[in-house]
Image (cartoon, rainbow, N blue to C red; front, top):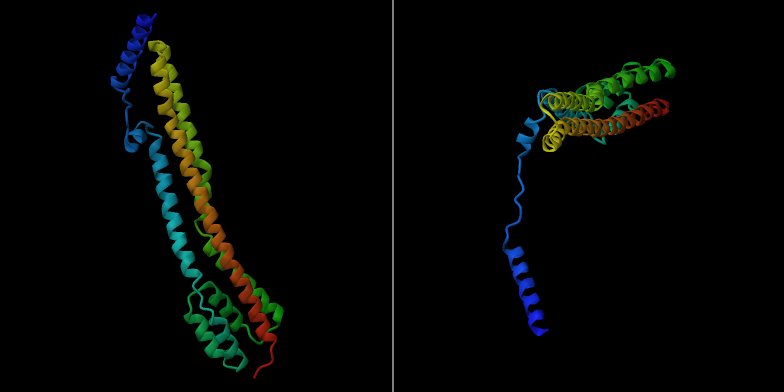
Length: 232
C-alpha cells in the first residue's frame, strides 16, 4: 500500500514539475499604429475629422480664454467716468479694452442721452453679436460628434460585406472569420472615440461660452444701473 502511495506522489510531482517548466503560450502584440492601419481606407476620413476637431477645440479654447480676460476694475472705472460726466474717457476706455464686455458697454456709451429702452436694445443686439462670434465653429464639433460614429459603422459594414464575399468564394474558416471581424470593428471603435472626443470638446466650449455670456449680462445690467444713478 505504501509502495503505491509513494508511486502516486512521485507521478504527481513529475506532473507539477512538467507544468511549471513548460513555457506559457506567447501572446502576439500589435502596435496602435499597425492596428489603425488595418481599418482600411475609411480611417482616412476619421483621421481628418479627428484633426479638425482638435484644431477647432484648441482655437476656440484660446479665443474664449482671451474673451474672458476682463479686469474687475473695468466696470468701476466706467462708472466713475460716467458719473463724473467724463463720457469721452469712458468711451476711450471701452474702445481700448478688447473684450466682449467692453464692446457691449461701448455700444451703450455711444447711446447715452437716448431713452433707456433704446440703450437696452443696443446692449442686447451687441450681446447677441458677441455670442455669435464666440460660438463660431462650435457647430463643426457637433457635426463631427454626429458623423464620426457613422463613418466608423460604415467602415465596419463595408468590411463585413467584403469578408462574407470572400467566405462565399473561398469557404468558411473560423480563424479567418474571427480575425476579419475584429479588424473590421476597428473603424467602429475609432469613429466612436472621435465622436465622443468631439462631443466632450463641444460641451467644454459651450460651458465657457455660457460663463462669458452670464458676465456680459451682468455687465449690461450694471451699465443700466449706472445710468440711473445721479451724476456727481
